[in-house]
Amino acid sequence: MTPELLRGPFQLRLVFLATMSLLAGTLGWLGWRLLQQDQQLSAQRMAERREAAADLAVAALDRWLAAIDQDVARLLAAGEPPKEAGDSALFLEFRPGTIRIWPQGQLLYLPDLAPSSEPPAGLFTTADQLEFQKHDYLGAIAALRHPAASSDPAVRAAALARIARNYRNAAQFRESLQYYQQVASLGVIPVAGMPAALAGALGEMAVFERQNDRASLRTTAAALARELYSGRWPVTLATYHYVVQEAVRWVPEAGHEPAQAMALTEAVERLWEQWHAGAALLVGRASAETSAGSVLSVWRGSGSRLAAFVAGPDFLEKQGTASQPPGLVLTSPDGRHVLGKQTAPGQRSAIRLASATQLPWNLLVFDANDTDFTAFRSRRALLIAAMAILLVMIVTGGWFIGHAVARELAVARLQSDFVSAVSHEFRTPLTTLCQLSELLKRGRVANEQDKQAYYDLLHGESHRLWRLVEGLLNFGRLEAGRMRFRLESLDTGELVRQSAAEFAQAQQAAGHCFDVETASTSSVVQADREALRCVLWNLFENAVKYSPDCDSVRVMVAGNAQGVEIAVRDQGVGIPRHEQRRIFEKFVRGSAARESNIRGTGIGLAMARQLVRAHGGDITVESEPGQGSTFRVLLPVKRT
Ligand code: ADP
Image (tube, rainbow, N blue to C red; front, side, top):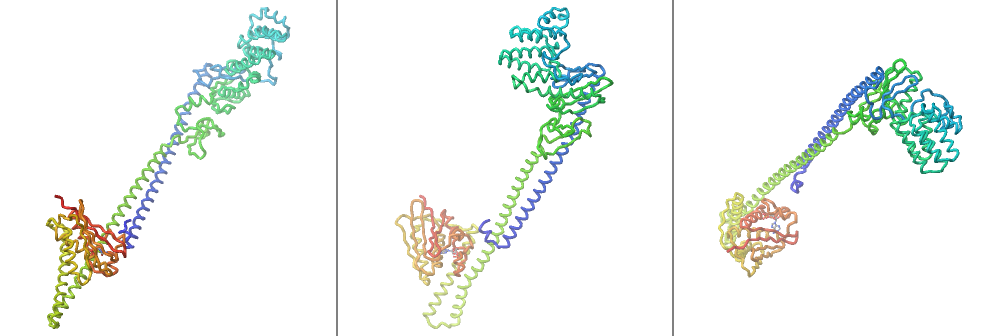
C-alpha cells in the first residue's frame, strides 16, 4: 500500500480490500476443491490398481499351483517324480510302511513309520534285534569272524560297536576309538536303531567323556550336529531328539536347527500322520503351520498311495511369488502371516479370501509404491505454487490498479484545488482593479496625492496579474515541452542581487528585507536569464509568503569547481518532513499553506524544479516545522 492509496477515499480502500479478499478466497476455495478431487482420484486409481493386481496374483498363483498339481498327479501315476523339486521343496510318495522322498537329504528325521509308545532307543543300552548284543567281548570277536558278519553289514556294525564299548569299559580308549571310527565309517547301516555314522560319533563322544577330553568332545559334537542337520541320515524323531540333546550338552550352539528343513520335516510328518490315520486325502492344497514357518502341501491320493509336493517358505518366496506384485502378502486362512512384507495397520489393501479363490492362503495386495501419491504430491505442490503466483499477480495487479485510481483521484482533486486557487488568485487583484478604476472613473478621488497612490496600486495589481498569467503560460509551455531557453554566461551572484533588489522593491508593502551574501569565488553559469529569474522569484515569493512573523530572508550564493549553490533561507512556518518531497509536484500545496489560507496555486516549486533541471541542476529543501526552510538551487558551473 502506498501512502497515496492510504490517503485515498475510505470507500475505495474498502472496495479494493473486499475485491482482493473475494478473489483470494475464491481462488483458495477453488484450489482446495481441485486438490481434494485430485486426491480422491489418486486414491481411486490406486484402489483399482490394487484390485487388478490382486486378481492377477490370484490367477498366477492358481496357475502355479495347477502346474504343481499336474506334477503330483504324474508322480502318483508313474511312481517317479517328474522333475527336481528345487530348494526347500520335495516330492514324496507314501505307501503303507514306506516313504519315498525326492530329493533326499531335505528332512531332519522321518516320520515314525510304525509309531509305538516305546521310549527312544538309547545307544548300546536298548536291546536290539542282534544276538551279538548278549555276547561279551570275546563273543563279539568270534561273531566278527562268523560268516554272517562279513556278509551282513548290520551284524558287522553291531559287533564292532560291542568291541568298542568293551574297550571303553576296560579304559582302553585308543582301541575303543579305533573301533568306534570303524563303526562310524559304516554310514547308513543301522546300529542300535540309528545310522552307524551317528552311532560311531556318539561312541567316540562317550570315550572322550571318559577321558575328560573336552576339546575333542566339542569338535565331535559339532560335527555330529552338522551331520544330523544335513538330512543325510534316516533317523526317527526320537533318535533325532536324542542326538541333538547329546550334541547340545557339549556345544550349546548346536541347538540351532535349520528352519527350512525343520518346516519341511514337520509338514511331512503331519501329512504322514493324517494319511496314516486314514484321512481321505484325495486332492488338496493346504498351508500348514509349523514351528519354523508356513509350508505348502499339494497332494493327490489313490487307494493305498499318496503323492505330494511339500515346499517351505523359502521356496514359496523364490518360486511362487517371484513374478508377483511387490505389495503381495499371504496369510493362512486363520490369519497368520505366511509371506510378504509386514504392513502397517490401517494400510489399504485388496483382499482375496482363501474360501473364495481355492488357494491355500488369503491374499492381500498393498500399495508397494506410492507413485500415485508422489505424483499427487508434486501436482499439489505445483498447484499451490501456481495459486500463490496467481494470488501474487492478482494482489499486485489490484495494487497497481488501486494505486493508479488513487493517483487519478488525487490528481483530479489537486486540479480542482488548483482551479479554485487560480480563480481566487485572479479575483483579488481583479476586485481591486475594478473598485479603484470605478472610483477614478467617477471622479471620486479629488486629492492628487491619493490619485497617485491609486495609480500605483492599479499598476501593482495589474503587474501582479500579469505575472500570474505569465507564470501560468510559462508552466503550460514547460509542461508541453515548448519552452525555449536562451543560454548565456551569467554571473549568478549578480543576478541574485539584482533579482532580490527588484523583488524587495516590488514587495515593499510586505516589508521583508533580503540579505544577500555572495562568495568571492566565481559563480558564472550557463543559463537562461529569465528562467533563473523566474526560479528566484518563486523562491523569494514563497520565503515571504510563508514567513508571516519574520521579515528577513537570507540569500547565499557560493560556487566551487563543480557548481554554484543558491540558498534561500527563511525563518517561517517550515514544512513537515513527509511533505518535503511532494511539494515539488505540480498542484501540490502544503498543509500549512492550506490551513493558514495563504494564497497560492501549487505550481511555483514544480516550475522551479523543472527549470533548474532543464539547466542540468537540481533543487532541494531542508526544513523544520516552525523553524523555517532553506531551498537550495544547485547549478552546474559553465565549462570552458
Ligand atoms: P504555492 O503557490 O502554494 O506557494 P508552491 O509550489 O510555490 O505553491 O509551493 C508548494 C508548497 O510548498 C506550498 O503550498 C507550501 O506549503 C510549501 N512551501 C513552499 N515554500 C515554502 C517556504 N518557504 N516555507 C514553508 N512552506 C513552503
